[in-house]
Length: 283
Ligand code: GUN
Image (cartoon, protein in one colour):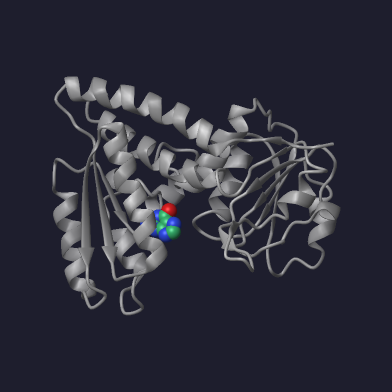
């Protein structure tokens, strides 16, 4: 069996076309959705990510502001910028790119963002809303994974989903979203003694560890859906995920590639969250 691909680029194009149409409609009512992105320091990967986020805003007709600050910026100065953006009526989403320099407490900065503008979904209020099933912003990466499952018409009710990784940004919110759709959810992590025993029971596997070859063909039940959140480099410097793609695709029913899978979906869901933040003003 060779798995069918879930194409994150194609799905992103579809979803972004819908976002663009809704941005146009909102503009006709006098509101241009606006995203502010704050980058502190010179992290090379972060520079690429923020460029892509700003470009996605341009492509969908949204307003965007990119603030670049030196790594020496103080925590107090950053908190003051967040406050100013909280009060700025042209800004509907605020994103502080992580990681931040070590002298700045990231969670403190995240908590300073107004929950109404927390389009990353990292604020404790957003996390609490997800946990309790209340309205709020969902973190973009697991939200994008849910959209990928939806795009193949996958019914999660009654299925066993295994999430590998327990980060606040992906693993934990992913598990809650799957649970909300009535999957039976197992979260595995570095302290799980027999990962393979768990993944072999899974109908859906989400790998979100940040390490190559965490999931290999012998760990996957035939026909399972495999979502690869990883973004790593192999020995030749090529982008690869957490999943041994060539091996696992021989066993799985569906699989997301890296690149061209979850990656583009993350930015797409950021556009969706920013748009919906602005749409709430006229709802
Ligand atoms: N760094 C890596 N991914 C992300 C993300 O989704 N949001 C923010 N703010 N920083 C990140």
